[in-house]
Image (tube, rainbow, N blue to C red):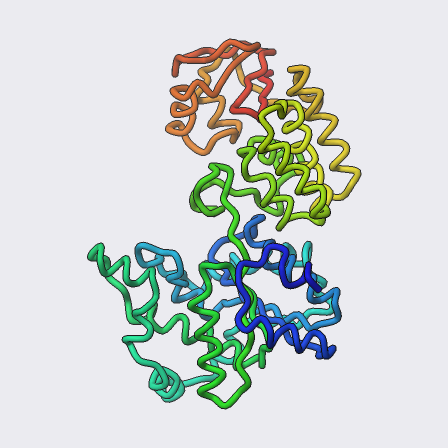
Length: 390
């Protein structure tokens, strides 16, 4: 039980109440809601998904809510400005892959799946007025992100004020006993308790999970910031991105994203803190982390394959066996080749990579936007991508 209540957990409200229910053997309804604001999930999402799976494995009922209705408003948590509005088409497109990706972590066959449009599209303005009347603007404005935006002169829409109340009503609709969320969700989760209380339902307990920083080592993992590792990424990309992770983040990643025992993570922490720790030792830990993540989402066979290939290419500085090939009509400019081969999204990005000295051929850095690539040459793009020009 200690692993269930402590590993990756930041705070539990009310912890003793929850522990007592677990000790009694109560079967609890564990709620987790995710708004489809992007087209895929990343490792940051799996912190709470993995905790939901742990409760599933302990015999509790997982209740997974896709917030297709609340996504039209946008969660203001952690925002310094209003989110852009999403159309119904945007939301439908984003939802297509959500269940498939969540199913890589939780057991969908045993989970209770809902879209919160199930109940909201049946409601009218009378319901909204009744629900809103149970809360005051003063209480809603207490949240830290709203206070910061007010201080900075940023607007806050009335819909954003309603968002935590609507998310809170989800807890009442599914009769949640415990709701999971990141630390940035605490205000919303506590509002769920208040909604339940105002409608005469027992208040859910709340468990907040730690947030993980992205590949930049500082900001929360986010697709919009480009510092993320997606669940649907190719095994070699997932492995390579993990190998670029700052060393200091390894203990947290091991703790909340893998099942590696705490004793091993403690040894890693000692290696990180040791003045005598060699770079090779830390590289070994990072390789272990990359291997574990690929194994979880792509299987052990793929994990072994990409580990061996990574060591062959990057340790021995060889070219991958399955390097992408692109046929061109003659000696062509590097910028056009990168764009035409879909190696980059735009000429601007290609030129930025050249300016950042991120392109090379046979170890020689490309510094000229007009550089001509000869047939048969292999261009290295950043730390992990290669393109052979034919």
